[in-house]
Amino acid sequence: MTTTTMIGVDLAKNVFQLHAASMSGEVEYRKQLSRDKFRKFMAQQAPAVVVMEACGSANYWARELARLGHEVRLIAPHYVRPFVKRQKNDATDAEAIVIAAQRPEMRFVVPKSEEQQGRAMMFRTRTRMVHQRTELINMLRAFLYECGHTVPKGIHQFQRIEAIVTEPNSDLSVMARAECSELLEQIAALTARIAASDRRIKMAASQADTARRLQTMPGIGPLTALAVEAFAPPMESFHCGRDFAAWLGLVPRQHSSGGKARYGRVSKAGQADIRRLLIIGAMSRLNWLGRKTIAQESWLARLSARKPRMLMAIALANKMARMIWAMLTKNEDFRNPATATAA
Image (cartoon, rainbow, N blue to C red):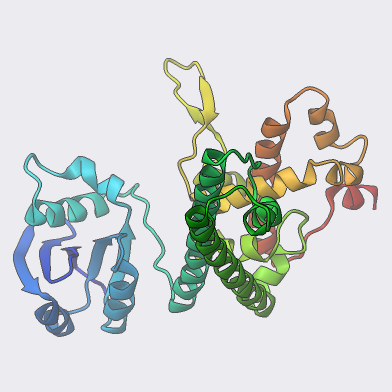
């Protein structure tokens, strides 16, 4: 059925603002509905194109409205902002959503499935626990520094910290020792929970075919594979691998004018989690052990002779992103370029 109406929905917790217009732009109606009435109202409407900003509950409502027969599109909020007229309120936001979505060159966000949201929650939970553990370790290091003990950074220094606190002849006061022991217990508990989360992530990555295929590439482990599967849209939505690398923010920021190209630092404008993990994976290939696997005449070996290590890591992460696009679009495992060229 051909849809002739576009409905812009400004989502909220309890009150939803609707702005309906024809495909040519004529306004049909504006409504403000509660959460329960919104579901009933949309069930009674003829199939339409429903556009919402990609926010917290957008993926849930995208699935619900799709079950009702509507065509759902999600749009990034920063693409809607330029179309807001003067005063900002729910009504003008809903109108701006429709105006932005009717632009023929507009880009949309692919709604996430329930499985993708579950993997994203698993990834975010682990990331939060790591941040909490780092915060506690830094607090403990600061307490010990105030008592005259200096400890280097890093989780691998935990046993050294524990030895200082639990030493029988320690110069720490009774109260300081008690507080530091409490922090040690919290850090140990978080470490155990992070290890359990790693096991769940590894199991989830081994069960998914996409994650298994991604792990055949050097520098990509279960965590990176799960992040790509959870946060990245279908690779078919990108025209080429360079578009995927640009979406991740692994390309230089461009400020060109008058036919003269000007490039700056890496844009960092895309998905931060995947970009960070790809750079970490690239750095692992550039350490003293990973360098042994780099062929002498490869582009990475030539780059290492004239560029600093961090720049090499970003360049390698960019290439890894393009390889990910090729692997997932062609449904193939990783093939070493040097081996493929020699064959």
